[in-house]
Length: 506
Image 1 (cartoon, rainbow, N blue to C red):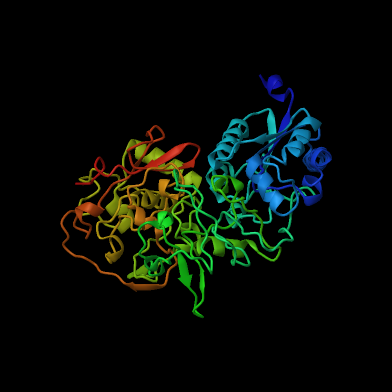
Image 2 (cartoon, rainbow, N blue to C red):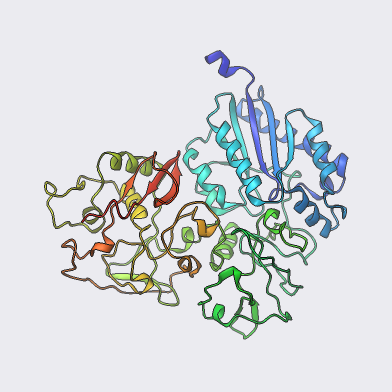
């Protein structure tokens, strides 16, 4: 068995080709450029492997991209021809250069390439013959959940830097390497390109509007809102009350402090991949950032515009408060209640799953510090829970919506007022969510802290928690997806779930 595991060792270079675009001189040279790109990438990886003592391993490269969308985008800046798949000769020659190199056209839907990259990562991350994985997808925070359970495997995973490298990937603690002169490291010279994807506007937004098709799925393309458009401006969006979100027929434009208008976030997307623009009749846009942009700049632009519920990127990860003053409630600019950010580590989630598979934790005791029942009389577990396990419990319980919603000022309310699911269906993911749609379009930045209310003598538990707030939490790795209140895959396939009807304390 051991000899079999050491036979034919290899390393995997996994590339999201919609975000990691090869250098201009490579893509513009078509056939020769594809061959040269493969050679340069091979040499760069070999140099890295020598430093790790893995020079005996073969190199497998898999690049997945929307070839049609990428071709159109490069054509707009004169780096490719006008043909629908003008980048095909480059991709074909890249593949032809090495028997383990593949540049794969994943099709024009975003999910195609994403699912391929995720599946291949899962297939090889625990494969003993695969000695190392170079992951080039760090422009898209949607991959975070895939990498998080393996963050301790520093010797097996290396992240490849990108000009729009998302700050969340730094938190994983994995090694980061640059592949200079292979993938683009700066923005395109042409300043007229709009940056599509992570909710980031271009430097100059005064361009023709991109027509919008009726969205069939959540990540259908969105129309752009520009000055000079003849379309009517949505007055409800400006006051933050538009219930139609990205499906609104009117322009979503905000007023700036000097009275000018700028595009709103329900109709404008920032830096992301070509796949989302491929359904639009207009040519796709190029996903790059300016050299001066730092990771923190990228994060602030991404998360300061939370109007688009189709985005998978969790705004709450950077905007929700980590610490709330005693006796206070965080609210946004519209006085809508926000929740404290719950961010359990994978090890905490595993411990939580193990604990609750045997006996459910008592919400009142662990989250509020008291329970009307003694430990002997309570049906739920009062034994010590670490802060991490408590955070996992809080995250699960927050999946039950508060009936008072944003107007709630109860200090002891355990229910959710905003969504904290990274894979929520309203953000383009697949996880079922009980919170209403409009909760996902709220501004999540804390504007102020207001005094909370302590409701004494509430019906239900003796500690001020009413029946509707008192949902218990359970977690099981065998919990199925579907109409149950599945929270999110956080660590090694474990599911956090909150089944409100089944788990009420009373």
